[in-house]
Length: 245
Image 1 (cartoon, one colour):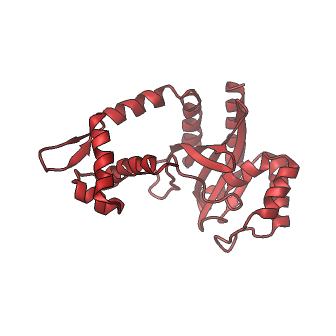
Image 2 (tube, one colour):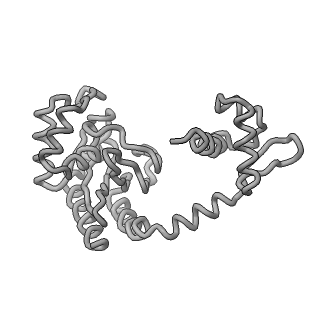
Image 3 (tube, helix red, strand yellow):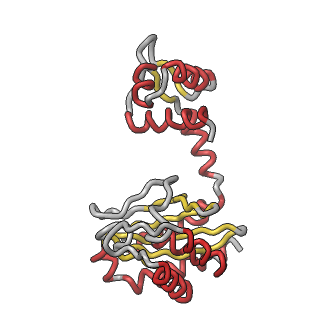
């Protein structure tokens, strides 16, 4: 990615994190880049109407132009529009976090996150990538969609880093786990990427793309409704597949 694109995105993420107006000096310090580079990005964003100077030398803050554009873009995302009601129903029935992710190459990123009202719940951010391929149910679900030769090739070169005491680090055991999960239709992660958390994932395809729905929550709650969650999860993915067929 080009440096100017990175810095532009960094500016918006910084404002979201800081939640206040910022001077050029503030931006330079927070992003750890030269003030001359900040000046170029800020002037370009100001000229396009994405940020404004609140008063002379009082600092800058984003306008609502980006918000309006994002709302328009989101409102016309056909997949998310059609998937969100089904995922909301799944969340309400199970009262756990439900996510939709998309595989691009060997990267899997979250497109949609719906969280329950529980004070203790699993939480991820839209746009972030899954924690790992081998230790998450979403990662294993993606690997389960690969042709057998591609799956074996991936496992031969993959670094199966231990993330918790329950992470599968044996290639043979992981391959067996993926094959078994692929046959039953859903993939599970019992504290393999994060202690105290259990997640279930199921893939579906749309327009030749691989998407993954995941249900995640604290281990004790999820264990009590594991069978029901698996059935509802597979039903949701079948409905999504039919919707986008």
